[in-house]
Length: 213
Ligand code: OGA
Ligand code: MN
Image (tube, rainbow, N blue to C red; front, side):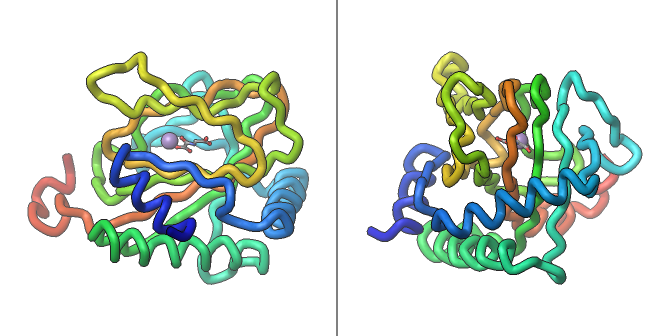
């Protein structure tokens, strides 16, 4: 099995998957350097929770800053990532019939002490996000630098957790609708590229009246 089919099989089996070979070291380095440059340049914005009129900046719940990728204006480094993501999207659709149609992604930085408390990647107003994924961009990250992503993969057992260190090249993917997760505070700046595969919203397509809920 190649790397994309391995990801698809793990995702089907356990609701999440891990790969260390999603991009080459040179490709990761280009993204890592770009993220740091854009961060230093002041292009990131504080992330918040909720959206539309419900948007709030609450660093005690979510303390990262983000920069959205613009699909029409990808840099060469981002294009490599995007094309691998596109291959993965097709493969997940072929092998798991997920009907994934779109992708959105942002760079994120968690300064030391920032966290993102336990949550699901769904807005209460939208069911479009189907699959979440994070690619980490931290070369030389050590266990003692903390900043793990903690997944709660089993709804029947909240103590069964998986902790993933944000080492450069680690790519994690999981179901947006069922897998609770949190980002533990790092001791150093922690960079990632996080994105979501989206599918057609059932609530919008079938029950237009519920759009306001
Ligand atoms: C998120 C998120 C995980 C990570 O942005 O919703 O959960 O490890 N990120 O950065
Ligand atoms: Mn999340």
